Amino acid sequence: MHAPWRCLLLVDRGAQVTLRCAPDGRTLLEVGNRDKPSDTGYTEENPTVLRAAGPFNVPTDVAMSASGDFYVSDGYRNARVHKFSADGRLLLSWGEPGTGPGQFNLPHSVWEAKGRVYVADRQNDRIQVFTPEGQFLDMWTGFARPTKIFVDENDIMYLAELSGRVSILGIDGRILLQIGSPDDRDRVPGKFISPHGIWADSHGDFYVTETTTGQRVQKFARKRG
Image (tube, rainbow, N blue to C red; front, side, top):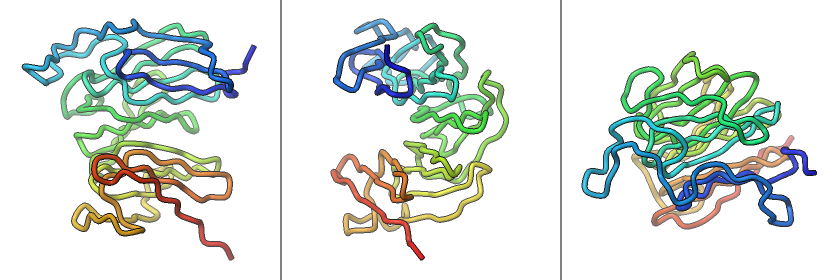
């Protein structure tokens, strides 16, 4: 039996499922109704989330808690965050379409750190902060379509913003550093077109993936000494 934290968690947005896989690629757990999106009112003819629904309708991200439970941001055609137990039972869901506290317009990433759950509310240009029970605590505004949250072991948050920027923050929301600008998007090294993913390693170096016309990975090395 593989411990949850020694496995790979991923969302398969086309199949409408979340998977836990062993290091050798075997599927250990699958949650969601494969190939059956939940009913949020979103259609090709009317591409708007009209109501929140259950798991999933094109999920966007998954993150594990210290207890082994995991969260899924269900955002491309839904407006919810779902929390599951380590064995895949749905524990709770929260969120609905909108711009108010606790509402979402494309929740694109989720992360739990120090007993708080951080959600990248992409099209509302903000991070929302919740308890693990889904109670709204705070929101941080002024971001540029945040797409991916990663928090390292030193409680530093790395945030990819689709509109051409990366922000590094404390988990209290203080901005420590910003690289790139929505007003100066470029494909030259050190600037961005469309940051979509971000992750840091044990040395404090971090990696940014870009989508659309960016189509690359950039590595940024932490200054030493």
